[in-house]
Length: 258
Ligand SMILES: [Zn+2]
Image (cartoon, protein in one colour):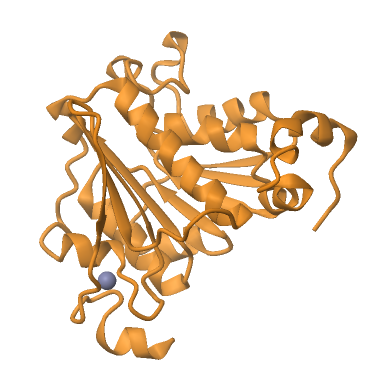
């Protein structure tokens, strides 16, 4: 792992002073390659956090362009950027926040055909996409490639965030939670149900915190738990997801492969 420059020692002083992170943790963060699926509301919470944190390489996948109705929650973007590529703008945002991070913009829609190719070479995936079909494609690819997945979603006044390592013995994947009924649910406009921007931002920040904890190797291992946050009661409730023995992604013979 490479050493930290004087700029980085200054930049990350508030991390390095934390006994749980220190110089060792900061070098782990610098060495990490994280891919974020979706530069939407959740991405607007997680991408700036990961950029400031000093994740070494940050890939951002999104095939969409900025719409005026996004600006209420997608704070990566400005009013004068309506119509421009979200992935490209998000990568430029990262570069402006922290020139020591190497961003890469992937202007494409993630599908069952290309998912493994896009995810390969990364140490952790954050999925902030807005539909079940994409979430399941991302989860299946992450499970097959044995890459930890932080899945994060927000709708209306509810948020959910979980860390999954479904290839491990007894560990569920995201598909264990959702099942097989939503593979064709590629509704792009689920957000039309409405959502509060501060909630998507909070969920995105929570996902970034889970990623940072995992990469730096600090805190309890929360894999297989889903954290449900309710914006009305403000309750945060962890639920344990059981591994489905018949899960098409991580169950049966697939689990025995590893
Ligand atoms: Zn599973």
